[in-house]
Image (cartoon, rainbow, N blue to C red):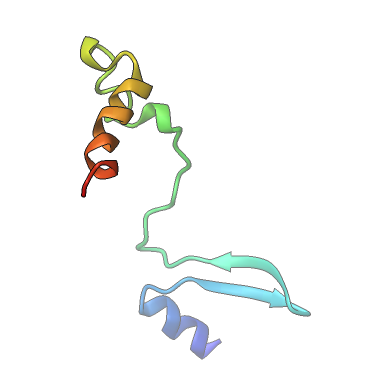
Length: 72
């Protein structure tokens, strides 16, 4: 128990195993809980959705790669 408390004091996560299988995780109390977020909720998602110059993404990628392919 002393080692577990020391790890938590060091802001480390402690994994509890039973017969080699993960049974639980103890998180330090000062650590914010991790929440799952959807990618679509990120502020950068869709940042270029209104740009008309990149409507054809295949053409844009071909143009970007063209310089690399034709280097002699």
